Image: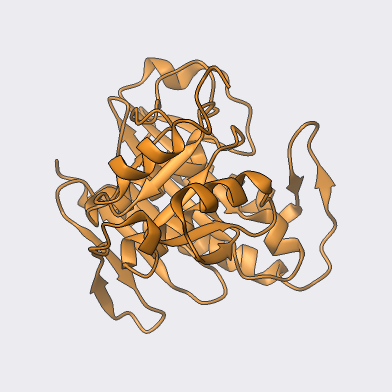
Length: 273
């Protein structure tokens, strides 16, 4: 699948949006709260608008789903759908932490085939297209290929978990897997980026708060680095459903751990209990 033009546009828009976000970082920006959801700021909205305009101009026939615009369902009629989180990790952003990122993904026939995740203050960018591998681009432009770790024992896994939304379910996960090493990071994209880099091995989110725009781009990157993401049942994430939410949690790993982790977690998060 030839996506060189798409990845170039996505990276350019991510960098432009990141410049907006970085300009607001640490300024005491006003925070609002969407009903039933998390915080939102002017940085979220401006970055969202910029990316949306750019994608519509470049790919007018594609569908578009972003965190800051209503889901009108039209995405379900399109073969190609861009999924955008203009500021993933807003809670970290407003608290002055660096666990936030700009994320752009592309689904074709319901599967992620392209991803860009950019941390605005460090300038570190992860990108991937299907069949072409995943890379990290440093702030100096240096490119490094991403490859997951070879850890295959859940007890040896280095867990990455939420920083702002961590709850007791993670303690249950750690106990079930006998994990002792945990790092806390805000953005889903940055968590999966650490797994793609081989610096972390596992991410478990039993909650149902994550959305399509949280995982599309990061999934494309993780898969190209050799990793895997699924729901708690081991099923592939659904990008074609009516709801933009992932209702059965998330498990992301280096792939080698995945089956054993799911087996050990099944009694904790079975549909019956």
